[in-house]
Image 1 (cartoon, rainbow, N blue to C red):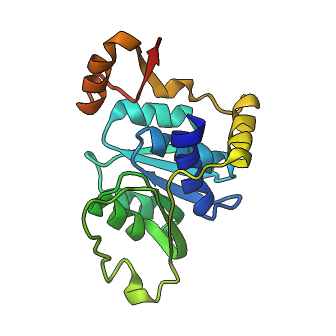
Image 2 (tube, rainbow, N blue to C red):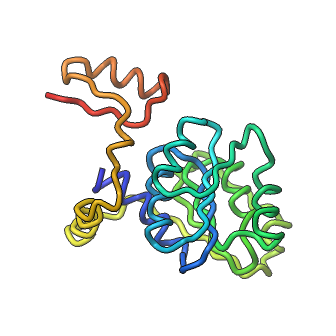
Amino acid sequence: MCPDIMSTGFKGAENANIRLGDTVVVFAQGPIGLCATAGARLLGATTVIAVDGNHHRLGISRMLGADITLNFKQCDVVEEVMKLTGGRGADSAIEALGLQSTFESALRVIKPGGTLSSLGVYSTDLTIPLAAFAAGLGDHRIITALCPGGKERVRRLMNVLASQRLDLGVLVSHEYKLEDIAAAYDLFANQRDGVLKVALKP
């Protein structure tokens, strides 16, 4: 997980400018979003709000450090975050899916001066809504990143795992023999049976 999923998720948290006592909202709880949730907690956020439409993934997000989980199918996430923050908005939001809707929601939940850390890989042009962007006067920061590497970074990520403060084993939801790789890819591609990550065993 270190050179890819964990590195990307943690970079999302690092770019979110998290300080002690912050409220952070993480949109999407796939493997990268789950690592961003864990990273936000490790960096000192005291309220981590995880957003997804899958109850199973929201349960795992609690195991990795989320304090509050919101199912976007059951509530208006922006409205809920504003209630939870007393109308102030979150200090930062991490977008880990790559859709216009999640990008826009992430922008809408942050306070003036807040940071939107984007990990999504977008396949179409993004539109920034005028009100959420405060017409450019909101002092927002939008930072993008994906999968930073290098020996020093991997050393640091390995230190996190060695400390036993984080168990990413929960991300491996299925194991297949190497000869069954086609079935494993089919499961993952079609997102069946609560799949997160698949381990292939030679």
